[in-house]
Image 1 (cartoon, rainbow, N blue to C red):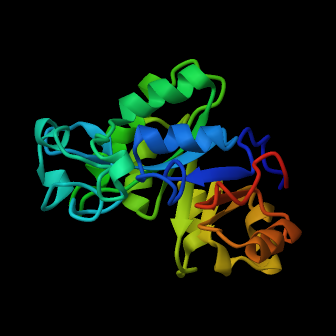
Image 2: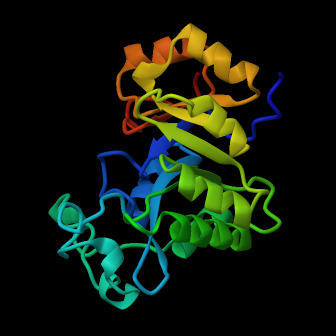
Length: 248
């Protein structure tokens, strides 16, 4: 089966600019753009009062000045936190962005987005619905919509029900039994694997099913070269300073 046209670039900047700036902040996405990237990966979750915001971890301690489970906090409290000072003094005071903030920046600058939906445990379906509904509204009429990805099939199913027109990708850290059947049932456009999982047979299997083969998180030239030789379709990287998005 021939996959449909793929509107996304090969290189995708992880959480904005990898490790060069505090992840999932607008400062990071601006820095990634200055390195020439035009597609970015981010992590989205739901506040206690239903605001979609950017954060990778389930808890606040690693990347903010807050404490506790992020999804248990109302947005008014999350909005007050410092999401940059943990990285270095130069970034102190960077706030946690909402998905709305990031979407408006991406749309104004013609950048593309891979939104990894990261639900707080117990909110898998609710977070999938909220992110998909918001993304569908924000990108309504856009030439290229965001790619919605998740490790959670329940989350992707909820997103599919709310906004079936938005492309989805199943994230995998292992090739668990039934992964490809699940992706096809969810009408996914892509499989996004830990890069070490790809080999020629698996890439062929995915492409024969009409899906694209993407990889995370690739930070070494040898790994990128291997994936290019396998004819995969996209790489998520921290090394925006090493890989030129203009090259393959």
